[in-house]
Image (spheres, helix red, strand yellow):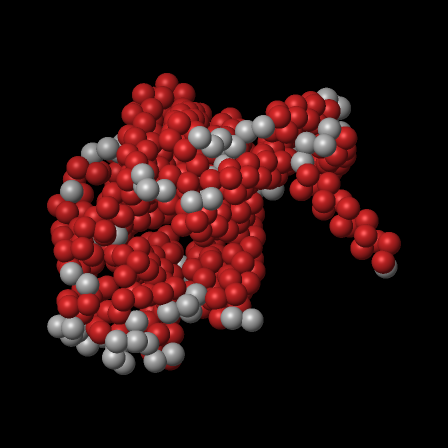
Length: 495
């Protein structure tokens, strides 16, 4: 088994364990230990820091993955690649840190007086946090280039979340003040960066001496050009993920931002199968472009869309039908105000999954520059809709803005792929799955709730599973589900 395959298996396991820890953190632990306003503040600091880190890095994390093969094994220090990778972002961070400091009065002016006062006390943490996120991202990119990814994944997916929970527990037991918790929260990201540096030193890949040879391997202008293009692409994606939280805090309150952040985390569970499939999709679609095999690409496009629809509808219904149960686990009634937001976010994310891998096809195609246009358009739509809808509908307005933006841009992307390359992901099976999902959803919702929220959850989940599974098999809507059932039957017979 090769190193890439071993690392891939480990990363998959780490990712699922990390996502499980993240869900427990978001639903069972942090909302019980912290107020909605405190969660909103930490989420806001992370949002500001993430945007600052993206601007500082100037796309060099992606540039590192793109250009490291040209530097690999050129001398013991890879021709001074690591200092080059870190050098410009360090300069960029200096500029961003100054801009964040100078812009503090402007940022604070977006928020009401009590929230602004709370944010002002911790605003400096966002600047330090931006540096930790930036260095962590760059070092992770370098380790990926070296095919050492497991330790970085462990630090970012598992250890980071455990350290944050530890800080929250220390705060709840009065071992830390809230200011101490915020510092510990940001410090967890710094610990990850320090551990990655230590790991590089341990494997003999920490080469910090700059060399002029680094500038001769690949022209700096070319790397800057690629980094700039990647920056624009990444920052639009970052805006999509962070702007609604920032604007909810600004236009309503930090407490509302905390509730919205929990709603976002709940809906994120829907994206897990999409992410897993899309990781495989990228390399396969790139290979199909290389071979110019449009028939295989369209077949793969349809299969991924069908599987995403099958899994996505089931998970969306499972989450949506049991929101009362999920919010009851938090034991704080105020978070139930995010119920409508969760449903709208689920709808947007489900459509994003159902439309398949249109973004990956565009990004790996000869017309990849259009992906930048789509991403910038998406970010702009989200900002505009948030500006209009949040004052009218509050949390539901932010979620509606996100949903409308995802539906709009994915509709355009799907049309673009069909118009440009003559392939589209839909066939009659997709409609069958959607009809079965609608029937299963109504069947699971129809029975009245029992006296126990646990029994209600089990009843709805059981009805949904039986009706949905039987419907998919009887309508022959998914060959993948039929193949899985046939495989299980064979295993049972052999045992």
